[in-house]
Length: 202
Image 1 (tube, rainbow, N blue to C red):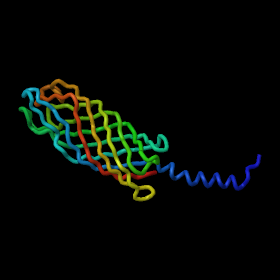
Image 2 (tube, one colour):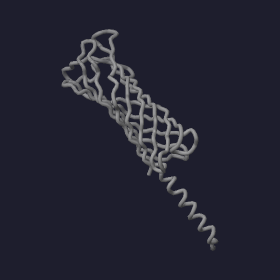
Image 3 (cartoon, rainbow, N blue to C red):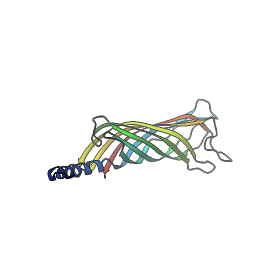
Image 4 (cartoon, rainbow, N blue to C red):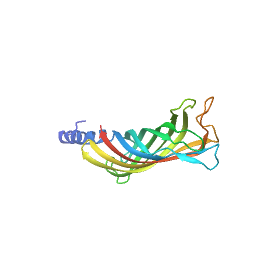
């Protein structure tokens, strides 16, 4: 069976036009943000609590297409902060990291432009930088809203507000390993963040 030349040329032209757009549904985004929240209670002084200090957080996401308006997202984030002295506990420098798998859903249809919702499930790594304390890994999730503003065919700005929820479920001696110098507990750790990202499509 012979295919008319004009039909063959039309198919090639369509494939050429769709190829770059489909490829650009993949994206690497680098974020800078300001994160706050993360409350813990003292086990030695009833009713006494403190929150992690608000500070800069760096994040990155890798997105790939699920369909025309949705992406799958692998998201990682890092924050260096401090739990201030409270309830007889000393100040504790703390590193907080998230690694989560989720996705984005663009409201207006096409991936890469306009408002979207984002979310994911994964784990939180809490690492106190003080002798006698150990790191903890807990299940967590994030949920947020954002807006993507294209700057060029392969570059865009992302503005996001994200909330993080970590299941601590500890009645005391969180971070303890052997002789413990702090005594804190918590059920849920919540944090919120405003983020600005530069997204590179490929």
